[in-house]
Image (tube, rainbow, N blue to C red; front, side):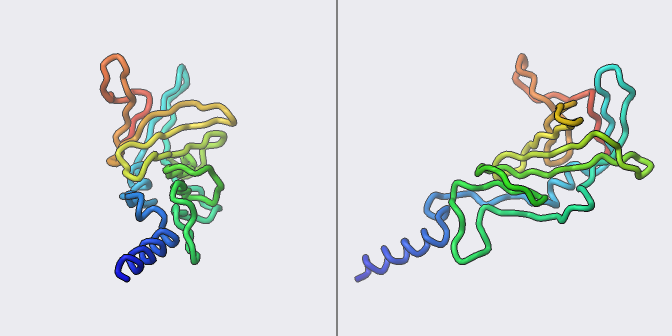
Length: 170
């Protein structure tokens, strides 16, 4: 009888939370942590262009939405799905958190033509990838740590190093 009760309990837990039996880690960060990492003033210098100074902000017209890998209904979705978007957006199943951003000049006006996105892979925010896009072209990208440091991986040295083209001041 005990074995049957334990089997039924395990079955119910698996149906309502498939990740429970798989040892799935919880998210160690949220939208506030990603927003804190990009808070402050940025200065981007690409090629021979004049430096561009700006702040990164969430798009204002869109509703801010945090989606988790578990649905708010009677049953959760597949344990393999772990994508979170901080704007309403559909995406493939993976442990990725995406935050679409807009560039705002220091005078408060939007910087036209360039957008940015911060992507954090995995359920722990150690380092995310900040990408700047103009139209369909990636203009620049670098890694951003949880504390806002900007780095890139030097494959020759095997270490993360500062990025002189992108400066972040808090």
